[in-house]
Length: 101
Image 1 (spheres, one colour):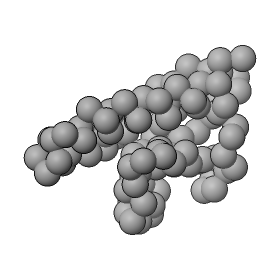
Image 2 (tube, rainbow, N blue to C red; image 1 turned 135 degrees about the horizontal axis):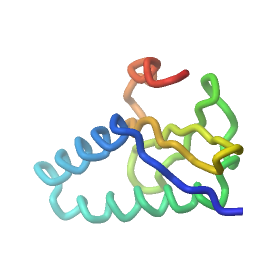
Image 3 (cartoon, rainbow, N blue to C red; image 1 turned 90 degrees about the vertical axis):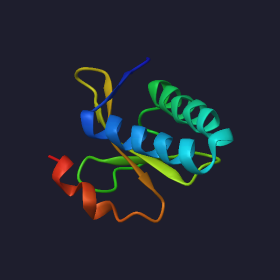
């Protein structure tokens, strides 16, 4: 069963902030980051429960090459994966506590 992936506005801003950083600091990596970001999101369509719940109902999927994580929730009822944050591995996840239910 395939789930639909949706980014919250906060997650969209997180992603855009990362892309802007790569555009400024390592422009040759921007497109590669975007490709990996969406490859990870597509993987969640097929395997939404591949990560365990870590904080409340939030789960985490690591990007393979880049040091970022997609924090997300799964809704079995709506068959939806909601990406709620895109965080650097060294970023404190407490920052997105307000995004959790």
